[in-house]
Image 1: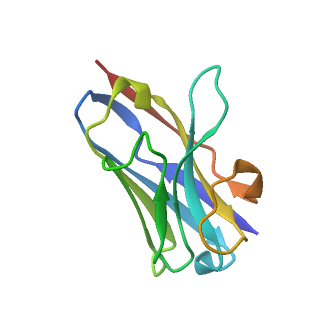
Image 2: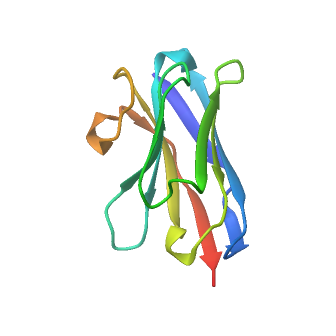
Length: 124
């Protein structure tokens, strides 16, 4: 089992940047593929970005490609999401997830563990 705690959310103006972190405790962090998802009010949770166990492979939703960067530091048990050129439509609660599947994992149902979420609000 692994516990996940996100941080780094907040209020930012359009065009600004934020860096989200997700610290894992419990089982070996490098045993999990990781991902970031977001959920806006009244909408389903959606895929944002994913990274493989060793960080060698990444994948992004089209809506964030070129603006967001996912990374991980397995020595610090930490997952990151660097978000640049933020837009009002990026406003949501952002969640990190851990999956026991191999490779890149994009499906919400394939994640075994979730953090509590961190709010990101982008003003226009």
